[in-house]
Length: 320
Image 1 (cartoon, rainbow, N blue to C red):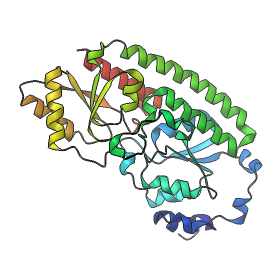
Image 2 (tube, rainbow, N blue to C red):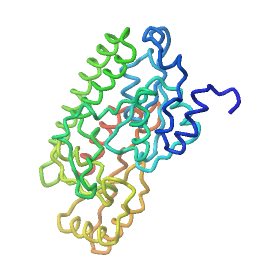
Image 3 (spheres, rainbow, N blue to C red):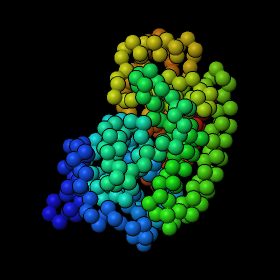
Image 4 (tube, helix red, strand yellow):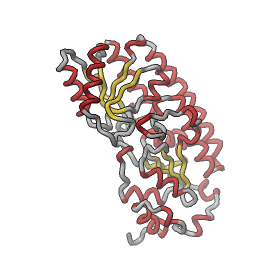
């Protein structure tokens, strides 16, 4: 670690051990007193956890930010563990944006305890807790997959704009204008999802996936959602879960089920086999993006492209 900035050297072992309480004196005195004008003269160093949040920061921050996304395509945030390199990047960030609601597991505790040393913002903090879902298997905790209701994710956009403006007020108007333009695009996206969902009769709006990531989607766009695993991919689907869902598919003649890009397809394949054993054929309707975006540079590598891909894949498969 020779040549590493003092703040990073001190924060690194603390973050790796998740002992953030020991890091009270980790930042240099000069860092604590850094004036907003210092940030206005250069790009902000921003860290974001999931691809969905990284995309917001790029849309709102534009050329003002240099953003590092911790979780790339195919990465499951429920199971994510920070590498030493990730910790170094976080220790040198001006601001860290994360989902919150325990999506990032133990990293959430890290971010909460970093407050006061490094600016951290949970993008879901702007959402009224009264409209969040509390699945029974989460034992009182909230379902963190709010981005599947576009109107809820618009609140996250507002929180990012507020967070960037808070540490860089000299460019606050730029962030607000960028956010307003992006929110208009998200409003159009919401209408697109509604229109496509409306192509299916109510009895066809049954979405079966590998885990319960789509409950906000189901509530917002009137789909019945069933997942083999719980809201967190930490839990595993059992044979009883597969058997019960196979019976439902056969009884209701559901034409398609879906795999997810960040989760192994083995449970959905086992479900497909269980359905076949009962004399009915259910196809895999396609791959959905749940906890991660697609590859950078692809349409699905943005939040808007990911949502459009999902609704188009779902509707096209269930219409047949």
